[in-house]
Length: 149
Length: 144
Image (cartoon, rainbow over all chains, first blue to last red; front, top):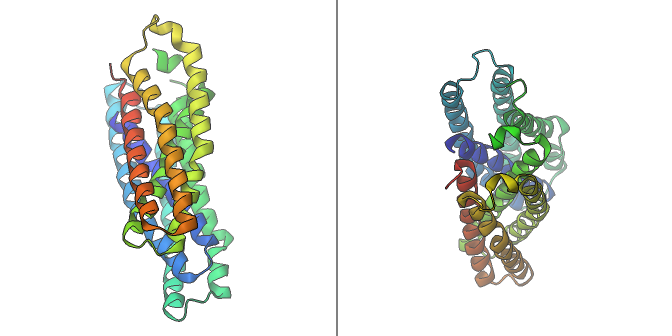
């Protein structure tokens, strides 16, 4: 139950961050973009608590339920957990840059700029967050499918 | 035994739908509670409404695949559903009314800007998130 609760925090927090990010990209004024990107910080706490607890209780279950030490799906899940967190961290830094620029523009008249629009729609920066989401879903697939167990 | 013998897709889509629904409601809870003290900020009104609306497709996926799993497995319960199934049904069906009421209030808030509408949306979203948490705890812990 605690492992699943951690997974809910991890995945649902990521979904909430994604919803707020999409709304921030579509916001008209820099002050609105900055506000929504600041609110993503709340979801980062939920994601962090969920990812750490899902890993800790997952490792505990690994031993408790007697799965093999070399179980492929468990090691693959740990690798995906690392990838999801690393990509999420890179995507978060991109969002932090966009938030700082949006805050500067909001303080200087609240008019958007090409630089902010380009940063919000930057394919490489956004791809990191979306790929983190793909890795998280792949992790969920492995947790439910348990191939080879 | 039941969990291990389940087909992959219905269980995966049920769990994924539930997690996306919780995420959408969590986003709405955050924006509406911030909007409690700043009801004049239009982006919070729009964000609350669209976050709640994005939960509807997730609710449908979660509920449809819950029914698919239940239809396949109800014989295993010998005609008497365990507590965790009852909690799941007890949350999803009245919970849909709470979600729809929250969406209605968020729409009212978005259109009118009235703080009272935003506060009702915030309370309803918070209550719904709590109900969803009870459901996931009951189902993952197999209460009863």
